[in-house]
Length: 134
Image: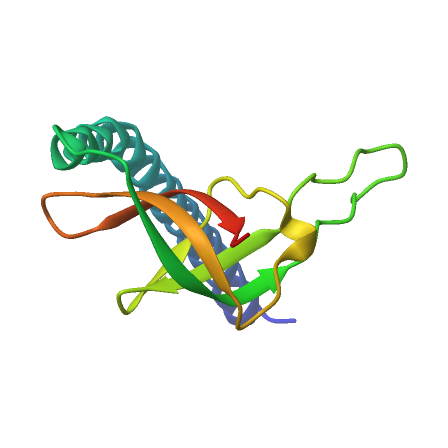
């Protein structure tokens, strides 16, 4: 190998290391900014939700079950099963995820259910409870 080829090879290796350093710096910067944005925005979003619900009363209505995903199986042996499934209902044209479900074994896709919810000043529906109609 002559000296020129060796020189160009060393320059290429150095250039690759520089790109790797810049890429790592870029990833760390993006990750750090994402983390800081989450830390800052989470309390702000919580305050927006509190303001949106201020003075609202719990309301009752009927909705249709759109999706039902059964209880989640444990990932590892010995873990406990997630006790309740994820239920998505359609209410006034909006899809809402239930935070609490009563008698989820009786719920089927397409059936009507009783719901308890708050409707914020913005019109957003905060679903609190889903249970089958009796």
